[in-house]
Image (tube, rainbow, N blue to C red; front, top):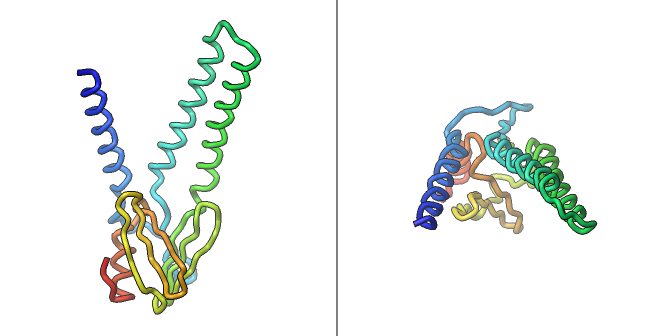
Length: 171
């Protein structure tokens, strides 16, 4: 019975989080930059991941205070796990704002979390595929270039409609 309730709670929590994260896919929240439309990621996953990291750091701190029979190895392990969660929070807060999708008159550009830019012109697009398991729209060109747009991008449906309109391809 406990396993059933845990599975039910996990399923409900996951469904609520996915619903909330994808809530803004029809929003028209974007900035115009030199005639280009810039779409950014929804902030909800960022807050969720930062909260996850903060809770992890808090649990490491509590474990450090609660464990009475500490040795050098225990301190090292707790310190490493704390450092992992701290690095996770820093990475999320630093890189999340870098991810954006820019739609121009002649091309689409996606800048990844690491700042890497991929540009494909509308004429070069051969294939559009949506991978539901990871929530990404994958656009492939004739030169084997790929652009991936995350499902949690604010205005995702508008981006998809624009791509279909410009290329004539269906997903």
